[in-house]
Each structure stands twice: as structure tokens, then as C-alpha cells.
Image (tube, rainbow, N blue to C red; front, side, top):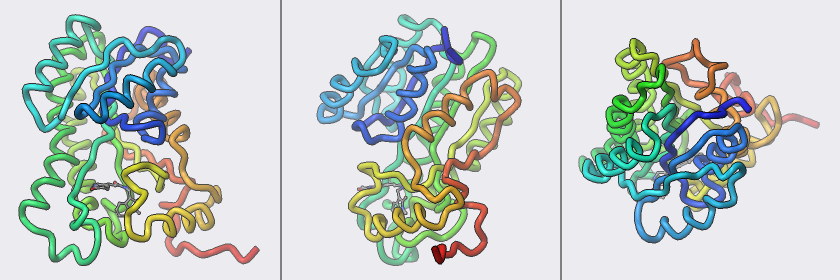
Length: 264
Ligand code: IMJ
């Protein structure tokens, strides 16, 4: 097993469709011990139900952590120090923008909507990195976050979430430079559209999801297990020379200059 003896923390499991859950399944399958966090009471029930279904009795810790709350972060890392001693990896799959800021014209975004989206979707990765660093003393560590092509190119309705992903991807590079000397690697996975709670119900999402599956070189939509396996690679010794990188797990969609519907 690729990750035998490794210990990691995953933020962002909401339900069985979550990208964070795809990561949890791959990391557990490869022998890692895991800590899972939940946001509040509603999310706690679902995470506690899912955790025991992972292979290899992977989940050792389940704890509340709203990443915008410094006290939650401190308490979580105190518990991890007690239960794990050291930490090998962190997976961050967290984002939020106001619903009203995910449709219409980006130019209408309010100052508080902008601040909220950037704080939850980009700054929380910095906060997670800062908290994890003192525990990553077992020869280094790895941080992985989730991004989307809407951070680089204009995607209809992605709006302020795209600006958050641009800040997040830039953070990946600055954090990689800060933490590299401690052998802590920092990378992002830019996932294609997946059928998660964060995407369904978004205006135009279902059509974009379908088109992606038809025009992308591999001709299928992105699944959470594809993202999970890439995540396992990035936190593993096989990626020991990789940091500050954005790895596309999108069926190759991002290489296309002019996505075209195949004629047959
Ligand atoms: C989100 C909005 C618009 C277009 C979109 C998406 N496309 C995709 C997404 C094409 C794939 C999903 N995505 C990549 C996200 O990062 C979603 C973030 C998100 C979703 C919600 C929905 C519910 C809510 N706030 C949100 N904040 C961020 O209230």
C-alpha cells in the first residue's frame, strides 16, 4: 500500500458525492490513517455515518472544524497532536460563495460577497497550512487543495468563485515556496465538473457537465474516484519532487483551445 503508516487530515467531506470523500476512499485504500472534519451538527451526522464505511478502519478522528474559526482549528490540532503525534498530509476541499454571487454579472459582486468567498475559499487554505506545519515534523508533509478552471478562464456564473480559485492557486505557489525548506509540498488538483452538492442546482451546471463529458479528450465527466487517486499520488512519495503545481484531473478538457462537439 502506497500510504501505509501515513496520517492525514481531510476537510470538506459533506456526503458520499463529495470530492473530499473520493479522496478519503483512495487514501484509506492505500493504508493511510485519517482525521475527518465536519462543519456543524447537520454535517456531523453524515460524516459519522460515512466514516466506518472506509476500508482498513482508516478513520481515527472525527472532529468539528469550521476553518473560518481559529478556535476550532486550534482545538482540532491539539487533538491531532494527542492522537496522531505528527501529520503527513492535509486535503482541503472547501469553498463557499453566496448563491446570489454565482449567477448574473461578476461586476455586480458586493464587497462583503467578495470578502466572504475569498475568505472561505482561499484564506482557509492558508489557515490550514499554518496550523498543520508544526505537526509535519516526520520528514515533511503534503498539502492538497481543490481548484477549478474557472479560476483561470471565464466560466459562465462561476464569477467570484473563479476569483477565489485564482487566489487559491497563487496561494499554492507562495505556500510551496514558504514550506519547501521543511519538505512540505503544496499542490492543487484542478478537477473537471463533478456531480457534487456544490455544483448541482447551479444555473447551467448540468449542461456544462454534459458538454464536458462529450468534448473532453477522454470523453467522460470527472468522477470523485479519479480525483481521489490523483490526491493519493500527490501526498505519496511518488510525488516527492512535485510542489507548487496545479494537476488537472479533467479528462484533458483544459488542453483544448476550441472545445468542439464530436461529429460521430
Ligand atoms: C459553480 C458555479 C457556477 C458554475 C460552476 C460551478 N461550474 C462548476 C461549479 C461550471 C463545475 C462547481 N465548482 C467548481 C465550485 O467550485 C462550486 C462552488 C460553490 C458552490 C456553491 C453552491 C451553493 C452555495 N454556494 C456555493 N459556493 C461555492 O450557496
